[in-house]
Length: 418
Image 1 (cartoon, rainbow, N blue to C red):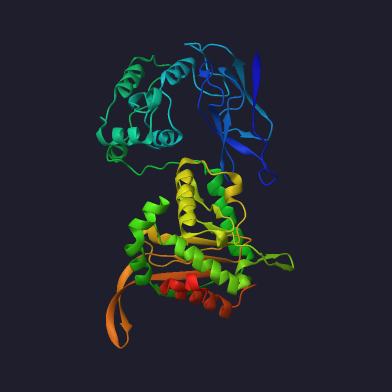
Image 2 (image 1 turned 180 degrees about the vertical axis):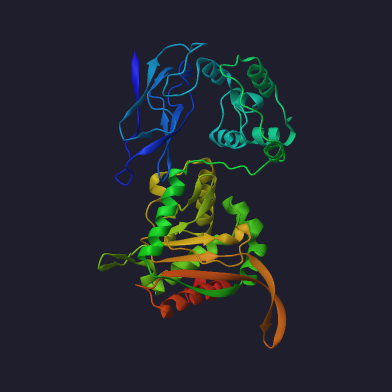
């Protein structure tokens, strides 16, 4: 019995998607609920599971094709057995021999597949250590570190190219100067299509700069009190809660308190109206292989430090795996980004519309500071608050940032609400 493979129903905010990759080829066996195909939208990657166990019968929309909700993209023969020499459909691309080679490859995890594509490595060249020989990201990294420059697969391709009959006269040899330039490496260029996520990020950044009056105010914060607190309670905190105590949870709690005192920073502009949000959904910018994403801590005011740290860790891990859900990166009333993890000393973050503010954290650097008439060395961090001047005046923006500074430099304020 033939079963249709359909695109899942997208939310209203997602018009269409692009077929990112098929994890199976025609003729290969498929288990029920196994991820068959990944569809990339401008927000997340949707994984389409197999509706039944059987054999992939055909692919109607190949990789790179734009698809819409409910569209049929392939067919599955329920209860069938895999064919050793199944030919790939035209939509999947490639020749029959290519399909056989791909079908012989072991299963590959999504992160490992991205790494293979990035370095131009065939899956057959890597030994998988996962279940059923599945190739993991660590296996590809190990291959890159210890693999040979010319593999057996490369040699086979070279031999095939040498024995292939010529259909047309060979072009004349290049001029000596050109040959020398090519031999020296030349100046290579590589053109690849922009991912939908990267294109959406670019669109929103331009939208923010064109439609908002963005200003940035700066301050610096002494991190020593928080660092001493972390040092004192680190082991007990991790033992009790099973998660490490980081800096981000302190900044989230400080931001929530500052947003309470300055509700304009937690508001947004909708036409000629100002929308004041009575909740605190804090976006945390995290990096992923596809680009920057901002998962949301819903009702951050109701979360403890351990809950905040645990959710941020979960967001970061699933962002690397491309497994964030659409509702987890939609909405938000304020955003925090930490360029310090990459070594940034100072930056001017761009607000995430329709939000009106974003807090930028930076690298902690020991610097000489004047304290009680003496020069002392303190671990200092620059803070940056970018805000929409259409809604927030400079006075409120500066006081908002000072509030965060006061909370971080005296963490007891977070407990005493002063």
